[in-house]
Length: 320
Image 1 (cartoon, rainbow, N blue to C red):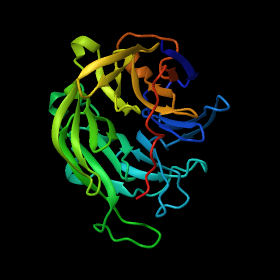
Image 2: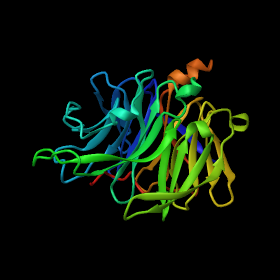
Image 3: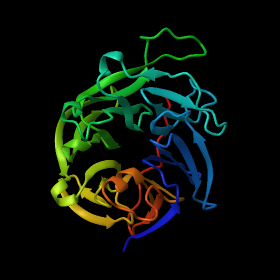
Image 4: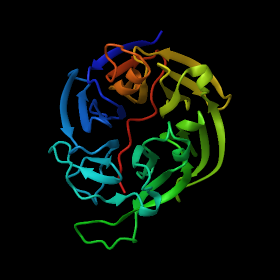
C-alpha cells in the first residue's frame, strides 16, 4: 500500500516543477508566490528559498551547460527563459530566450508554464494564457517550444545564441512532458488526456500524435497536470482538483493505480531519493481554496512511497 507524507509545509499558492538530483536534493517552485525552493531529502530539511523579483516562475530545470558557466538552473520567468545561479541567490540574469512577440496577445496575459529536458539535454517548454481554463477565447493561445542553440540572435563569447523552435500551436494549458525510448508523452490539460508522439531524438522532431490515456473530469474530478514516467514505462499523472495521482498504462490505456492525496490540487511529481523509489509531489493552495477545500497542508511538498515502483532517472539537466 502506498504511503504519503508531508515533507515541506510550504503553502505554495501554486507549487510546481519538482526537480530531483542524485545528491538527494529536490527543487521546486511556487509559480504565483514567485519563489524557488530546495529540500534536502537526506537531512530531511528545507535548505533555501530564492525569490524571483516578483516574476511568475512557470518551471525550473537543472542546468549543466558548458555555454552557461556559473548557472545551475534555467527558469521561465513570465515570458522569458533565464539562467539562474540558485546557490548564489541570483535570478537577475538576462534572458536567453523569450516568447515571440507574434505569440503574445494584448488582450490576455501569456506566460510560460511547465517545462522539462529531453534525453539529449534540450529544454521543452510550453506557454498558456493566464485565463485559459476560464475563457474559451484563450483556450488555444498556448504553444510548445524546444529551446536549442541557434543563429537567429547575434551571439558574443559571453552570450551564447539560443532560439525557441515552435513544435505545437493551439495549446490550452501546456503541462506534463516526458520521454520513454523513442516516444514523447505530453499533456494539454484542457484536452483531459495524455497524448504520445513518435520522437526523433537526433532532430528533436515529433510526429504521429495519438491519445494513450483519457482523464475525463466526470470520472477524475479535475485536470491532468504534471506527469512523469516510471522505470517500467508507465505514466504517473497528477490530477489537479481531483485530489489524486494516477498510474496509467499507455499500451492498454487503462488505469493501474490511483493514490488519494491529502490535498485537492496535486500539480506535478518527480522520482527521487537515493534509489529513485520516492515520488515527490507538489501541490497548490489557491486552486483548492477556489474549490472550497481547506486541507491543512495544501500547497505543500509530499513524498509518496509506492512498493515496487521506481523512477527511470533523476531529473535531466539542460546541457545544450
